View 1 (cartoon, rainbow, N blue to C red):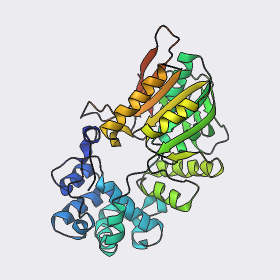
View 2: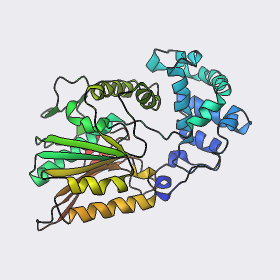
View 3: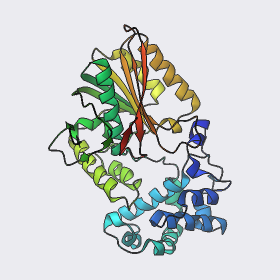
View 4: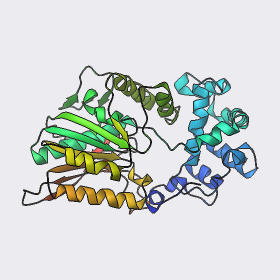
Length: 359
């Protein structure tokens, strides 16, 4: 069984329903892409007592936010990527497949029936996309903090960092009509990623690190496979972004410690030096127990009362059950200032980070 918490339940209306079949249908809607057909097929098979019911045994009461359907589809995708379900590759556009998505489910059902054990095990693997498009939200937040603080040297810490791809932000290129940031020779480029007037103050990242309860090593074949499997196979732009980011990570590894944020933060905050220390997190609080959210907030407030500290977040408004777009927010603590805590709504982001629309 998977333990749920209110934070996750408030932001996952696409994962709602009394049964897993209801939730599969809610997520699929009327979509005519591969996963739309697959999730509707999964719903029918679950109700009919087919192989989906066996794969999902023990997860019938998984809480909203567990996204069992995405865990299962990622497990199937890993079978395809490793050559154990070649018959499905013709339906996967990222692999060159051009067969109609409407014809995929019967083939996928046979694959699922033949790999029940593997796919049941896949349900224990939480979604790990490490969506590098969310680095656009980080950039918008860092621009805001640099302008507000006047400090241009950043020590960057990421909570729920996965493989740490967003920590490599200065190795990618971001360009608007009148501004540019990053490595101009990078193969990963974001054109016009921010909608609104951008104050692109220059800054340099002098140190970076992250934590995750289950970090992914992007320099290994298994790590690359896991990250790739959670990107929807018909979203070619996201696959292109991920592939480019993984190429960067192969030559510029980042330290990601295996630890929850509340255990990791105190030591790294205490050891930090001068410059602007920035804590960053994106689409992670919805998966944290409420106790973890409370503990991290207490740690940040205590640290901010003693030294200059910044935070950039890209999270859903957990108090708004209908919230469909994450908010990009910053906080800046400066105990020596007349306004010791500055809080700012930078804008709204797409779930995958691009674009960010400034407030």
